[in-house]
Length: 572
Image 1: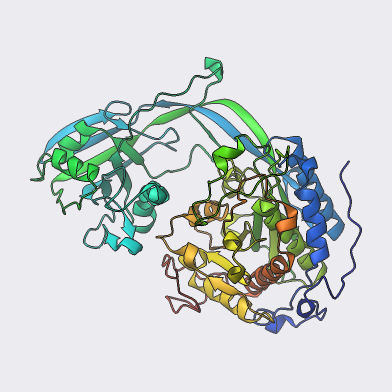
Image 2 (image 1 turned 90 degrees about the vertical axis):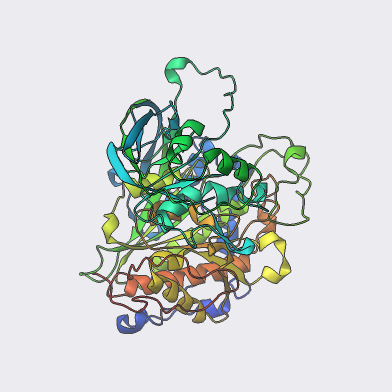
């Protein structure tokens, strides 16, 4: 049976007093000075005590525990009067995660000074199993060295190279000098950086050494190449790996022997600028897909409708993921030293017999903060625009819930003004006392400068502003946070996003991520910040301008940005 909450009355000692002002405001000035919400710490604690309880079994996707969590959230949305925004008039959107087998006829044709060779998928080149829709991508080849921009080491392979509109070629599986395994996320993001930031039309890099697949008991008829919640007919920018024969041909007329370049990468030595003039590449993506299996899980979705007849059919999306990783699957000793981000810290000792990853912070904290926001907007003054609240499923499984929503939105995606995502906001980074007033903001400047500035204004309006830290927004950050939570599913569709987190700690993805370690006053304060940002976006008479200037704020930076159309009038 789903537990029910009694309506907890606000108390001076459990509610941020300055946020409890129950006074309405005029629509004309709402975008500048929205009322501060009443956020009850008692509510947050009560909800999280259930969401992160052993009864929910760690909220692993496809389990009873996650189902109980979803039903619990939906019951509160009904009590608060939110409009169901899922399937069939419910608060639930079915998310179909498909197991797919690929039949590939894809190929890469390389032309060097008029001489052409074609490499088929699996014969000299390897395409990802999810290749997307059939397409042909062509362009000149451009060598991008290691394909890395990393400010702390003063390494920028794009400083004197351009791959815009071209097929980017980069080498080196371990990166440039001084790169270690700590830089793996930077290396893994090279293809995304080349296409998203440097505007390459495709990427080709060295294939990793072949690793024999572990034995499996899955019957051959049920084996899959990949699982996805995304559409299979989407256009995906090709990201290909290739072997030595391919690269020998590509560099054959460049004046630089590929074997020399390869040897330099193995020693992590600097790579010279190499002109690939006269080299063109045509990529033929031609794959068919067989759906072998389908798994169902659910997003939880509710709407607070706007008050303005001209703007209520546009939306501010607020999200968090409500799934986690279930029961502990590794021995405690194997994971005691898993947190490289917190220097010198090791895992705490778990309670005897504890095998449940409760996920109080990840992302129980975001789940209940989003509940508090839904309640505040539902019971407070109405914004001009509508607000849609989405508790995403299967973020831990690969952003499946948000990817499905972005591909199959329950409201038109071109009517979404911004997406605000909340993931892990209940602690201090590495439990450092100096982080007590800090929240990390990621991505707000990348698509819309105006969104960044609205968030800065919302923070400045708080009775006691938070410290907004942009370190994790820096492209050189080793955690590569921008691509690792649900906001990225919307950002990849061009929707302005802002991501709020308080960072990693030694209980991350561990059985000791418990409610008794949560900083509820801090959570309430972050909820007030997100409320203020959402209210400002919801009351704008235009959608935040999408100037797409990319990341500009990073470590040590703060404040407003003066960018293209930073205070512009976006489209209605």
